Length: 512
Image 1 (spheres, one colour):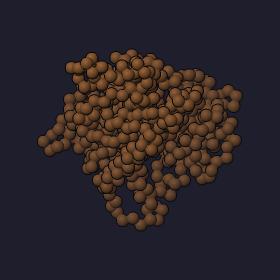
Image 2 (image 1 turned 135 degrees about the vertical axis):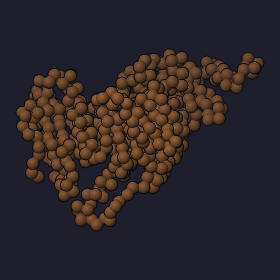
Image 3 (image 1 turned 45 degrees about the horizontal axis):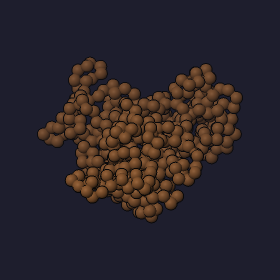
Image 4 (image 1 turned 90 degrees about the horizontal axis):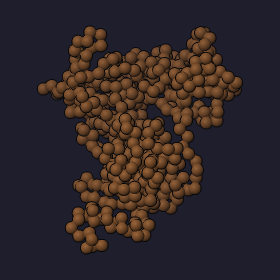
């Protein structure tokens, strides 16, 4: 073998040796190698290890264009759900301070927010989670490699370290769980050089100051919401509609509330240039949708939130036969999360058609490991996945939007029960509750199965999570009527729904 390998590079020699050993013995280094150390990959690897299997995880964070990098745990832990919710909480506390005066608290004015203090606390918490994930992998005997992984063939993985050192691993099964990263527009001069994305925002040590958020995805609106909430001048630039893919009536309520909250909106606009001035400020130009004349303004920070791109480009997937969806670049998977190559699987955001949500990736990863190593046949149920948009007025939903229900069943076949309500905690504080709204989209037939539930108001995530269980049990409108509420809560208003859109009656809730 030594003579046969003579003269080849170290990587090629190791690769050839591994291939020969595998072919001769039928053995692999690992039962499972997971490429990607985010929520789904970590869940899958730890679950597989519970069955006594030899498991490895490769994770490597490519720095953002601004050079931001982070530790183990993926988007959710480092630049997504966790820091987002904590900064959202910071904004909610600012609102609570204003409310507190109406409730009798003597709070001297003015009250100001200090970004570095918040950022340090949030970043320290995230670092503790990074360390916690490493400890968990070690405790469960999962081997962690801080390497950038790619496939050589269906059973061979090449890992490259920051220094360029190469490592070769073989595995009976491979799981791709590399997730997605924010997009930047290729056709807008200065966008990449002078802007940031959500990959950078949560790791800024100093306040972003006056900020332009480009895009109207949930990421865009959540970031704009907490920036406004902590007192920053924030503008959202929207090309077409907000919260594409969500119920559009609810999206309108969210943006209307944000407008009253202080977030500025520029509709039907997209930047065509970002320039850095001598002062350090950023001048953004765009075409005014009314006059078609060029307009401009200056900002301290420009944040792009126009969508995310699948991290598949460097994995060498197509070379080993893994089919990708042409437009999205995601891995085409079946109901078992299997790709077009039998022993290669994909979970989480990287799978074509899968909801881009952390709990989805975690559950799919665990179920995949149980099917591979635990004789389970349980598949992931991708129907009726609940979620919440953590905007200043939170929006929670589960099931179909009203538009999708009409598309599938026809407008005459559905009944929409709805209500505008006023949270009790808003009353003394004299807060605007005009966008606090609930609707249940149901079939008209029989006991009226609930197709979708939508809620805007305080603690929307907590409310929606509770009702999501009912969807797994076949919840109907009759079940809602039979449920006793907890008084006085916002969630109680869901089980009191009795006005239909079809009736034309005023849906405003009055009394206690």
